[in-house]
Length: 286
Ligand SMILES: Cc1ncc(C[n+]2csc(CCOP(=O)(O)OP(=O)(O)O)c2C)c(N)n1
Ligand SMILES: [Mg+2]
Image (cartoon, rainbow, N blue to C red; front, side, top):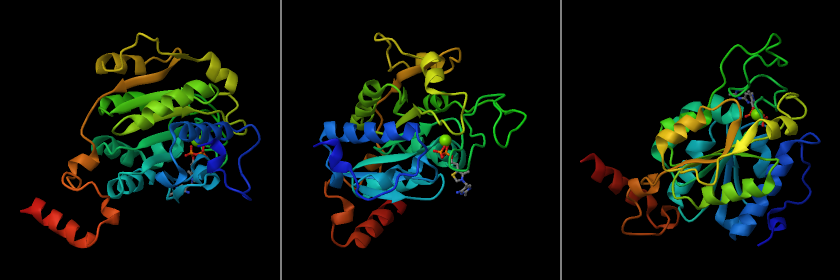
């Protein structure tokens, strides 16, 4: 498997020169190739935004959905065909703003999917308004006097809700990001990766240099099974930690729905799907 196996031909990429999304695209293709995941065994679901266009530039199963709605769709894709590696991806505006409600319930459901957020701390597609992760005081095309709200902390939020895998990465460090992504994809259960990404057009503050100077990696001896310590580390603001903050082993949504206990065949391929689903629902209602 090679990264080019995921390339699509004759497609115009609409990202600006220098956009962190180019690196993310490369990182994702290399990660899937190195994990030996074939394009037909992968599904990428996205919302709306520059980041959410990623599936267009991938030769694989793809669903470019509605704004903030990648998570429920990815949850359903995994539930009906657990053999697929399922990625839900989008931007900070899409996942933390418009899709915030879905984020919290995806964490509760714990489907075995990987949720990648291209976090450039701005609404890129709509030309530079503040997103939930834009920092306090930052002036934008809309918030001309500076943002007045505290930024959303996705890492603290995910740990507080007991998400089963919580990590943050920076796209400027390709090898480390691939390493974190591989662990997230191999983890059984919902994995969230807040992936720092510069937006050279609309975020002139959080540049490559800024991310380099304002982040550091959790140390080798750090124990990601300690939820309280993970929460404490997630609250650090002087320099933002990168790496795997927190991991737990919880039953997945696919396990909890009970459709695969006695039959491993994906329900999408079973005969008389509707009858099985109806019987299953009936048995749960009784
Ligand atoms: C329901 C709805 N509200 C608002 C919009 C306008 N809109 C499109 S993308 C976007 C924000 C995208 O920001 P982000 O997810 O951070 O993606 P980026 O472009 O930065 O990668 C907004 C507000 C929309 N398309 N649909
Ligand atoms: Mg964004």
